[in-house]
Length: 206
Image 1: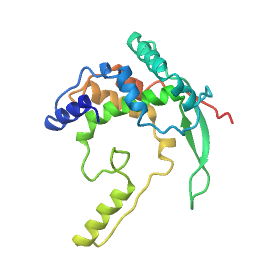
Image 2: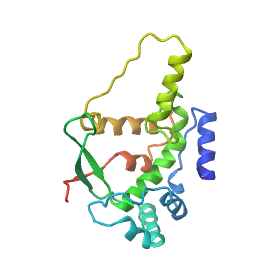
Image 3: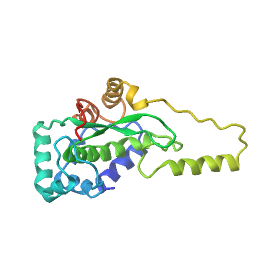
Image 4: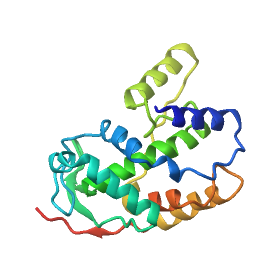
């Protein structure tokens, strides 16, 4: 984690009521380049067909272009290529997967790093899903510790069927933006709105 993100995370943890009203300035060419080094270079291409190799060959120029568009308020997320993938062993059917362009994926990851630094302090220690530095194996280890060291009579497992397909994305966006603009973690900023709103989906092209 960069020094600036570490400072933000520390401040968020020390003061649960603090508001962060200026975060977009963190999206610099240097920050995007640093984020690029953390990304999966084998990911599939988005709707524009550009590969990670092609993007990386012009990395300096491309991150400069993205930052210029952000500063001018001209950045628009391109359509997302949608594909259907198998649900996995023991399950029938498929689930939709959205594949952004390489440039948009980079910006999404950079924004996610900033949002994680702000909101990570608000999660309970027993939460493991989609959090940095945590995975299902850690959740199983914690569960095992509880079962072995404490008196446990029942273990319940629950799941929401087709959660990401059925959930209202408008409600999520509204809730997030309300938190951002209220007495929570930050203002109703362009960074927050970009992360959750205005996404378009394109049909799969193989």
